[in-house]
Structure formats: C-alpha cells, structure tokens
Length: 215
Image (tube, rainbow, N blue to C red):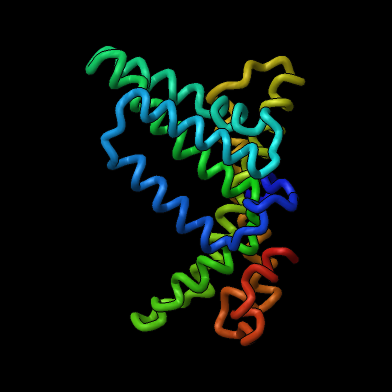
C-alpha cells in the first residue's frame, strides 16, 4: 500500500479514508451477491474504470491492476468455462476484476497511515473484551508494510540466482525465508528499543502505532 499510493488532489483523493473504506466494503459485497448478467458486469467494469479517470490516474493504473491478476484470471476463467460455460467464466472473472480494481483504487488514492487510523478507530470496541486496538492497528500496519519488503527480497534472491547462472525456482524459498526471518528479528528489536511490544510502552507510543511505523 505504501508503495502504491499516488498523491493527487482529485475528489477521490480528498474523500475521507473511512468513507472510501466503507464504500469499498459495500461495493465488494454488492458485486459478490448481486446477480448481474454479462452486460451488467461490463457496465460495472466501465464504472470502475471511470472512477480511475475521476481520480485523475493514468490509464496504465487500472490496466496494471488487471494485469497483476493474469494468472488467477486464466485459471479461474478456464475452470468456469469448462465447468459452467463461457457466460459463467466472464461473470466470475469480471467480478474478480471489479473488486480488486476497486481495492487498488483505494490504495492508490489513500495514504496508508490514514487507513490505519480508520482501522484503529474501527477496532476500538475490542477494548471491552480485553484486546488492545493499538496493537491490532500496529500489527496491520507492519503486515501491510512487509508485503513490498518481502517482494523486494524475492527480487534480490532471484537476481542473485541468475547472476550465478542458476535457474531461479524452488531454490529461492530458503534464502527468502532466511532474509524474511532476519528482517522480522530486526523489526522486533527496533520496536522493543522504542518501548513497543512490551509492558514498558509509553502512553503516547501506544496511542500512535503509525508514528512508530514511520520511524
């Protein structure tokens, strides 16, 4: 999410993060449950693409969102085509693209810290059952942050394998796992050094997990 955000001044960028997150959830549920026909899903895809235009994002952005799903789309489309026919394949693939592209629009137009603030408020009622909303928000922040980091580790390992003339494949699993675990240890040590993840955490740090994340 941090790597995907594109700064802008469009009405979509300026909309509150909580509103966009709620609309995404409502849109995903609606698209999942509403029995749209082939034309209906074509119209829904057109609306999603129009939203990218309203957000003043280049055409390559919705195309990139769809391209990232090419493997899943191919497998899902082939399975549905064989089992239920071409109409079911189109509807299933279109529904997947609509929801993922909406989620992509959210991450492209919303700062990660704004989303984390919304999630922290959303889980605040968990205090009643003994949970720590700040810890939940911090965990979500770290999880989201780790995704591009681990992807970068994977690219580095593959490049190292190619440089040695070794075909990258299952061989990347072990070095990728080692790098990931080492990085996790470093992040844990950094959090403990700042008083997070222990009973010694200060009140200000416990209320501001996204501030600690930015550090």
